[in-house]
Amino acid sequence: MRILLVEDDDLLGNGIKKSLTREGYQVDWLMDGKQGLAALKSDSFDLLLLDLGLPGMGGLELLSAIRKQHNSTPVLILTARDTLDDKIEGLDSGADDYLVKPFEMAELKARMRALSRRQHGHSEPTIEYGRIHVNPASMEVKLDGEEVELGRREFTLLMEFINHPGQILSRVKLEDVVYGWDGDVESNSIEVHIHHLRKKLYPEFIKTVRGMGYKAEKPT
Ligand code: CA
Image (cartoon, rainbow, N blue to C red):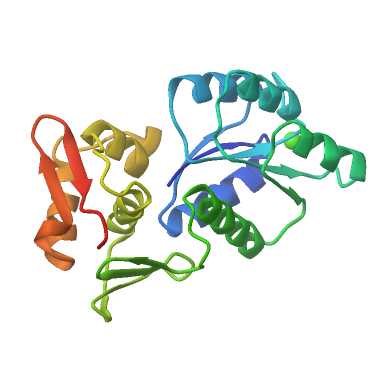
């Protein structure tokens, strides 16, 4: 999952980025509302974590702007303003959920998983995908009931395939999901991760679509 974090608090932003990165999320972090808006126009994200009090452009203004552009990226607002009016205004502006600072990272992660389930139409906390069983909360993956050890980036790729059954995902798209703006991507690194995924799961799970990218076989 590729996440855009727009938060101007250095300490909190760093903490969120580190904590989510450890769990296989790709986090791109900006501290300015206008830059956030520009990023949402040029790149696609699976989730926006949005502070309200921001330099450049306030979070609510940013949110209204992207919804007007029919950008439906799920939005989770992170803010210290805990009055009822602010909550209602945030949700009415198109936010999907709301978390009041200070919060526990565990709660943030649980809400992110819930949003992701809703977005991809999974109602259960664990995902059955044919022979593959995934628990996103614990990052446990099983193939035919046997546990499989995946690296963080392999896990991120697996989730991307599972969330887009049968769809062709381009190498550029997969690089964005796995690396974001962190750069320094070796030109064949996605191929290498996919090679490992096929080996650890099973070869037919991911098909190469020549000249276009990759797709996961639909679960049967
Ligand atoms: Ca702030």
